[in-house]
Length: 300
Image (cartoon, rainbow, N blue to C red; front, side, top):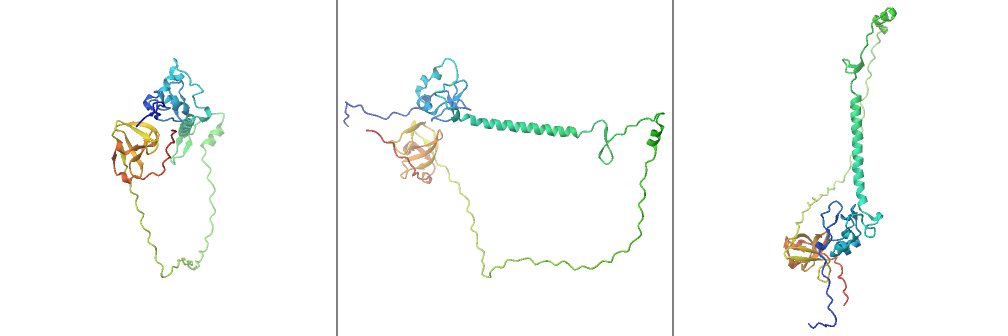
């Protein structure tokens, strides 16, 4: 092949390794998690307080070696994230997580109120010093005995007087016993019965087949570094680099089986060449993926 020395050859830029990215970019709940792609909830933990970073700035700076030129990375003291690289207030993801905390607080308040009402009812049902139980079990007030005094003899006499009995009920004369009149037994209405033709034959219901679980087919990387691409071919851009020994589930393939679609690399599916992996399982059971994006156009 003869190469024209007057014009330099235009080679595609190699994919950026995720290990060159900023070590302070991670999830809000886990600062040690490293991301392969820009994420809407990615947080800069070097900023104080930690704040969400714009996805475009993640792509151009945070996930590349250029993060060493970031103003937050070069700042001598921790401080807030500059507004030009932070996510606007109306587009943030983290405020949505506050609803979970508010729900937990509301549940705790309801439990505390319920506990207070329960303990209050238990104390209200207690028996005080002036209450007792009579033989029937109902609480009654204890009697207070007051000694009679000379100034009130009539009150003492009335207190020791026998209670007044109610007058006896009048006795009614015996009445004649009424003669029983025979009554007719109740008429029972006949039960309606559905009439079916003599030639009716019930239709047999076929049994429902039980679903069979499809075994998962996996791909084991057997090369030191393997490109994961957007489509089945070298003309597609590489989206990540995976190391030898990595394992992924095979979710699709091309008809001739030369490229396999795996899942997942940082939450996204990608394509790898079959020669670089060791397939564990029956690859013919994997469906053929016909929804493949067209390859990117290159300018000569």
